[in-house]
Amino acid sequence: MDRFKVVVTDYEFQTLAPEQEVLSSLNVEFVATQCRTEEEVISACRDADAIINQYAPISAEVIAQLEKCKIISRYGVGVNTVDVDAATEKGIIVANVTDYSIDEVSDHALALLLSLARKIVKLNHEVKSGTWNFNVGKPIYRLRGRTLGLVGLGRIPQALAKKAQAFGLRVIAYDPYVPAKVADELNVQLLGLNDVFRQSDYISVHAPLTKETKGMISDEQFNLAKKELIIVNTARGPVIDESALIRALQEGKISGAGLDVTECEPIQPDNPLLKMENVVITPHVAWYSEESEKELKRKTAQNVADVLSGYYPTYLVNHNVKEKMRLKEKGLYV
Image (tube, rainbow, N blue to C red; front, side, top):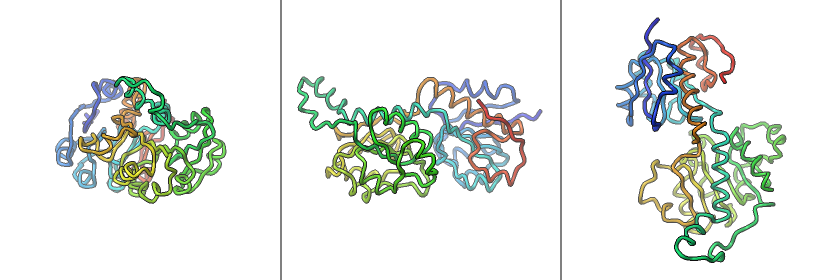
């Protein structure tokens, strides 16, 4: 059997044992690196049969230098680190993991919303600073009867919609790719993006980062929003024009923001968002639980194992690649 070279371009995990376990049945040389630049990825991956990727850039320039790569499998749902068109053109499969942290991310989005709506972080700080006075948190509004707008209505926001409705929130959404039937079954009204901003008391962002969605939430949307609006983002930072968000917060056009992602990660120490008491920021952790991390790592590696074994992976992103390669279909991986 041929010996395959599998390269991990970069990772934040303490161990890669789950990946190695999944690949152990194959004759694999497993190489873990910490690439940051295109040049480093090319050097590490030029002769790789498969690539596992977290944040390192796999651009068209990188892909052009790959000599025998069959699959790029990404930790997570988004594939914005990979030039999918270039990979497809070269006959390289791109895979992700679309279902590993649905509860974690929807829970985290709701936690950010609740902490801001109830002013938990501010009140906690006041108490620990010696102030025992509920008035410092005013105004706080009742959740029941208010409106949550979702930007995106995929699996995660669908889960969030159900959880939010349990709090008595009306849910509306913007997603041009979701059938009306899906929204109807969730009791969610589909609207245009600007109408979602006009009507919402809270907004949770769940759109993937693409050329079309980059900066899609900007001054126009914030100018339409209620002054009480709280916006939460657990998707990708650049979906929101961060300069416009900062202006909207500074000028009182909206009342708060809960961010698990930012335009630049890690967030720069001079970012004005860090000094705003009506902004809660977490370090891109919404996806994480002990269970979801193990699931993510195993499924990312399983994509690689599938392709190296002659099968299309369960989590195939670029279906058009099938025009350039012939692999066997397989059942769902569980």
